[in-house]
Amino acid sequence: MDKIIITGGRRLQGDIKVSGAKNAALPILASVILGGGECTVTNVPRVVDVFTMGKLLGILGATVKTEGNRVVMKMDALRSSEAPYDLVRTMRASVVVLGPLLARWGEAIVSLPGGCAIGSRPVNLHLAGLEQMGATVTVEHGYIKAKAPRLKGARICLDFPTVTGTENLMMAACLADGTTVIENVAKEPEIVDLAAFLVKRGARIAGAGTDMITIEGVKELRGADHEVIPDRIEAGTYLAAAAITGGDVCVKDCRPQHLEAVTAKLREAGAEVTESKESVRLKASKRLKSVDVKTYPYPGFATDMQAQMMALMCVAQGTSVITETVFEGRFIHVPELQRMGANIKVDGSHAVVTGTTQLSGAAVMASDLRASAGLVVAGLAAEGDTEIARVYHLDRGYERIEEKLSGLGAAIRRVPGMGQPNQIAKGRA
Image 1 (cartoon, one colour):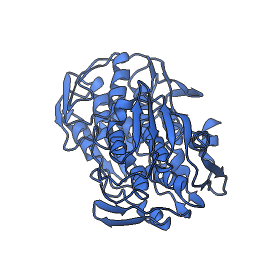
Image 2 (spheres, rainbow, N blue to C red; image 1 turned 30 degrees about the vertical axis):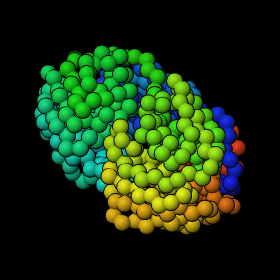
Image 3 (cartoon, rainbow, N blue to C red; image 1 turned 90 degrees about the vertical axis):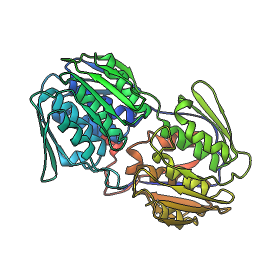
């Protein structure tokens, strides 16, 4: 397996550009299932999750052509209605093909999702919503099986603002008879981006980004062109990296309004943060102070930034309490940070972090996508070498992270290993 080795202690300085948002690109790519027109999507990040979605769409019958960060796709016929376990287990977002398959083709067989080991994240809200729209849904032998000759509009109230659940139900409703109203929906920018693309294709959607989305079903969707929004989590990761190294970094090609929860905490910790239309600059001229963080659905502090902020708090002055409210298993990176000398005590959904003046490089192991980013952030400030194993998790969501951080002065390199295929290289073939 590949490893990433970081020699810490270097102050990051300079400009860094953000790639397209993985979490926006995945449902946008999946939505090709809804219509036969050709779609061209740009600013698509070249990450393993995107390659996995491309493979899955190919199995279902779509043609997907990739040139750099541009994807051209079309789906005129259904080859298979089954999203197999071998692909879905590696990426939970694969479940977003369920709604489009059911809406356009009348049936879907989708493996129960896998992905990061950060909690159960059940899909029961997806299934209950589809049943309200007239689908017959069963779960057998690890697969979701759904059928519906034609979905019907319904009023659906989600128990929790699930992101993939909102995306699945919104896409399904695009081709349903009548009007669908979904309440207590997720409000993430990635959902707004998906809605914008669907509207370009002829969907009738109102309210994306608010608590309630209304979709008036249409008979078919056409092709369209779209540019994926910048990745707010990648941008936040680089801001945390700048902060932990006492750096001066300008994160470009981002949307500052999507980062407000993160930048507010960084300012509270003592960093100097300035914003322009499409960039955020962070300067940290002194040791930062501890701040408390509580994750919430958007526009709250993103759970996907929790590990990176925890790494920063490990070297901040004072004691902070980090509370995880979204996923119950998202402190599994704590033992790895403790190997680097971090003082962290976990009590249920709370982590009490007492800052130390110096972390020490160590051999650590990534357990999920964002945990791996947190370990990278910690390694940038640690004394000596930090060796991060299982970086295939990192490759799922970050495009050329070693190259980008090296451009800021970080001493970071990838060491190819045995036993795990280079998924990035494989995806580019």
